[in-house]
Amino acid sequence: MTEQYDPYENAVAEGINGILKQEFVLGIKVKDIALMRKLVSQSIQIYNNERLHLSYEMHTPSFMHNQSEVVIKTYKRKLLEDLDPLAVN
Image (cartoon, rainbow, N blue to C red; front, top):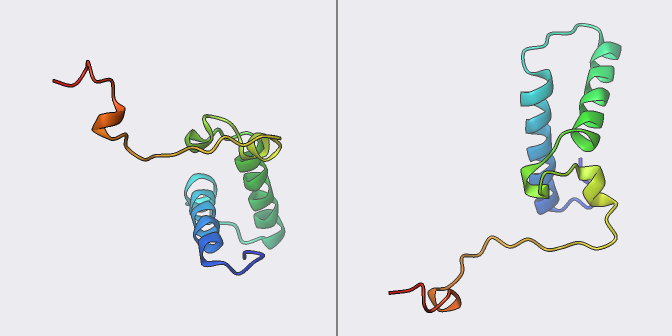
């Protein structure tokens, strides 16, 4: 559940939920709810503090969250004019 009830936050939360399910608990059948809670808690700890993320330049979410300065990453393609004019034939 997101704090602001923002649809964009919901998409991020769903993505994280999917990763937790697929990478950490997929195929595990536990009847004990306390054990499952412990498993989920450990999965979240690993996700935030140990699992490296390509979108975070191979850092963890905790590392990125504690940064004092954030470098905005863009995925826009450079226009042909922005490229080196000597490289364009």
